[in-house]
Image 1 (cartoon, rainbow, N blue to C red):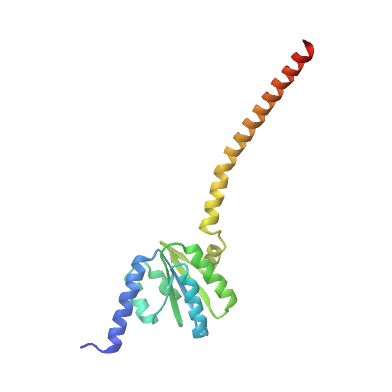
Image 2 (cartoon, one colour; image 1 turned 90 degrees about the vertical axis):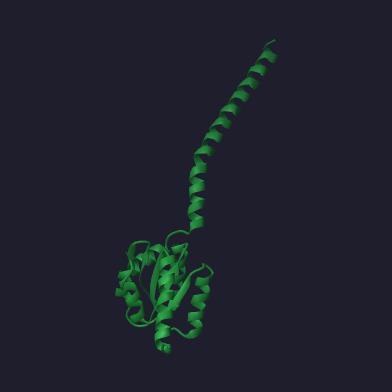
Length: 177
């Protein structure tokens, strides 16, 4: 029978491996100094975007990261750290982290991985300042709509001028006859 500590390390390691395989983005944050309720607030605001905060011992995390494509994250593991696993929208998750770190200075953004690119703190902040996915979609729709609207307006003015011209000809014939 395994000791409880070894079993805990094995289960934690397996959970990190699973989450790393399914995530396309991972952020590393330092949370030392945050109270339990503040950490729960962070977890709750992240869960709205289907993002998980996972706290694990650095030794376990380094061992798991060493044998994966996420090896660069090991450089950010100093002190109590947490992993944020993002499956869908990294922009929304980075916005939540950025605003939470501004409100609670004890939460520090360390770095992360976006697909295959290593992110520094400044990269996460730049990602947080991007417009949301819905806003980008709206901008694309407006961009596609504007030339069509312009064509419709030009055709409408041309038809109006044509109708006015016909009306003027009609009036001229009525007065001239």
